[in-house]
Image (cartoon, rainbow, N blue to C red):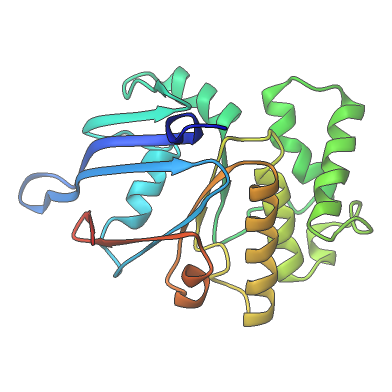
Length: 230
C-alpha cells in the first residue's frame, strides 16, 4: 500500500507572487502550501481576485513564482529554467480551461493528438488509437472525425478533457471548466473529468465558483487574500 508521500503528484511550498509595479504592486499569493494526491479531486473556491487562477498558472508552470518551491512527483522544478518548465508541463501536467480552445480546422481526434505530437513519443497509429480511446471514454466515440463546429458546447469541452489526458499527465488542472455550460452539460463534463482522472490515478485541481461542483470534490480549499483559510 502506498504511503501519502508516494501519492503526492504535485506540491508547492511557501509560494509568493506579486503582480504590477511600483505603487500598483500587489502581493497576490502569500506563502501558499499545497499537496495534490493522485486519485483525489480538489476544488479551490474563493472570491474573485483572491489568487485562485494565479496559483493555478504557477502550478501549471505557465508562470514563475517570486519565491517558494514547486515539486512535481517529488522533483523540484527550477523557477528560472524555461526548458525545465516546458518539459515537465508536457510530460506531467494537463489543462482544461473555461474555453475549450480547439483548433476549428482539426477533427476531434486530431485536436486530442496535438499534445502527443508535441511530446513526440508515439507513432501516428498509436496517437490515433489513444485519441479514439480517450474520446470514447468521454462519450464521443462516434464523433472522433467531427470538426468542433459540428459538436455542441458540452461535447467540445469533453474533447478538451480528452486532450488534457492525452499524455497521461500526473496532474490535471482545470480553471472554471464548466463556466460556459448549462447545468446538465456542467455535470456531464465534471463527471467525465473526475471519473477519468480517478480511474487513471491523476491528481485533479479545479478552480470554480460553482458550489455544487465544489461539493462533489474530495476536498475543498478556500482561498482569501492570497492564502488558504480553514
